[in-house]
Length: 565
Image 1 (cartoon, rainbow, N blue to C red):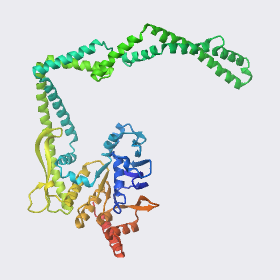
Image 2: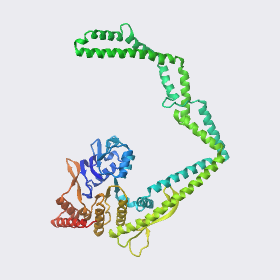
Image 3: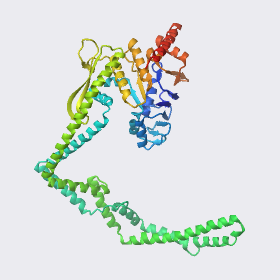
Image 4: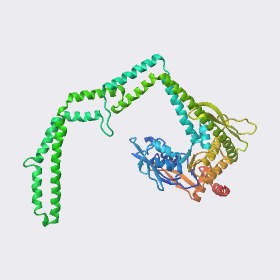
């Protein structure tokens, strides 16, 4: 679950640390107070993109950090795959700078936004106002159905076969060239193979250098040969000549050896300088070896010949847009393709046989997937009708209709949600008849059903109550309280019914000091909750009557929650 979040220099929030608990937590505040900033900050932690514009005016950087505990198994598996150490807490942090630098870390280890997004889907299920619009797009209906069906294994199995079929079809299209195209391609491949062969490229030995790397080092030595010789000879002579460093250090060591036994500190100095003498003696030999091995042996190489050989590599690399190491692999690929073209007739028949077998396998896997979806669709429809009936839509009819579709990576199916909200109306696509308030309740019904099947421990609803009021709003609040019995729920709301039903209430408030705007998030006690609910009820002028009503709403809500099973 989400334990806490720390926000620094994001929009109007200077510094704010917010703690969360289990159960149903409501977040309220005046319009413009900063509720969206809190929601956006949580989204940043989940890997959403952010621009430098979010940084508070006058600041160089912004920070968002969140702590998660009690991770589900699916999240733990990803954390392990990422190589991240985890004990009791998972800390995700993102930093944004005014220069556009954006970094992310999990428990101190740098990660990519893609990794954050993958992990985020296992930590928080986010529902914003825009998600209601997903219900109007039938492409999302199949996604919701698959989530409910729990058919990931079958979908992955099918997707693997689908990819094999597509790859085989691609190979066949490439092989089924007409004679003219085949001749042109054969000549092109033959030319490439011959062109690379003429260069006589030598593959690198395991763990060794390529010929290009060796020649680049040799070119550098040959180009600076005289300078290298002069410097090495000078260094060698300064060590080894009659009055050189080696002799002087030897004499120093000899002088100290005669008195070292008189003082332990002198003995330590003598041992150190004696060790330096031994190292320098070895160093002198290294100079001699370098002069012989590197400089003398390379007398046999000509700089012009090395440059000419390197120019051959450069021409091929530029011509085929490949590195030295990739050129040999590219040649092998061309040889395989050429061989296939020469034996294309028999190879085409082999591919056709293989494709027929894979298509047969694909159809079986698609049929299995369809059967699972149809069974799940019926169960999903029944559960959603039950949920919507509770959410003040007692006469609703709902159907998840599965139809045959063109084969794709998703299967041979399409899914569409149909609804009849009132008695006597026929089932029609949601996009044709559902109002804003109905969409909110349908989405909550789906979320409620899916939450039972998903491991995700935290659900966040950003103004899910849009378009509803009165009894329907009360029912939505009660449903969220029910889900909160086994999930952590965070709800941003403007409705008193929702605010009164929460187990914990967070208030986002805004103030201005010295021409600057500051936003803070405060947990409310019972008195604070009464005042805030009364404000939502009455707006500008809060009366004692409104406070009494707010207190009564809190009492009724507590009583209703006690009856939730």
